Image (cartoon, rainbow, N blue to C red; front, side, top):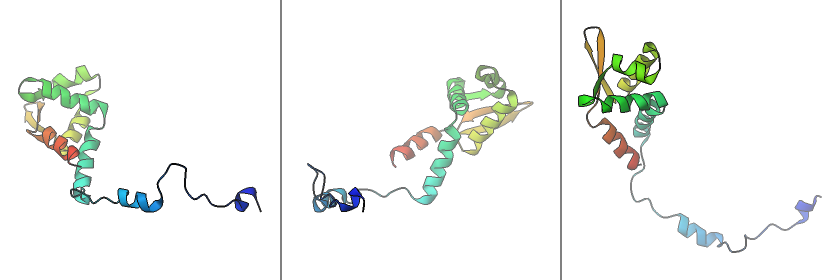
Length: 127
């Protein structure tokens, strides 16, 4: 037998409440509904779209333009990425419902979806 096997099991750490006392304190009822599986998947998709420094910058850059709309040609150089890479990031943001895309001639213009960021913030704080 080892030393540990011959020692009695501890009855509780000094200064800590017994199991009965902590059970009552930790079993408080929920005060609101927890997020459901479908809502969690949707929220995770939106957050995943924003969880990239380039995409966060793109959202910020679009929001900073007049009428919260910017041409892809205005976004490529300041971001320091190639046009195909910027277009990919913008596509992800469009698919997440954060930006809309409007094709005008050879250029694509991106605009913030009205209320999308506010809605996302509200869903995060409601969790």
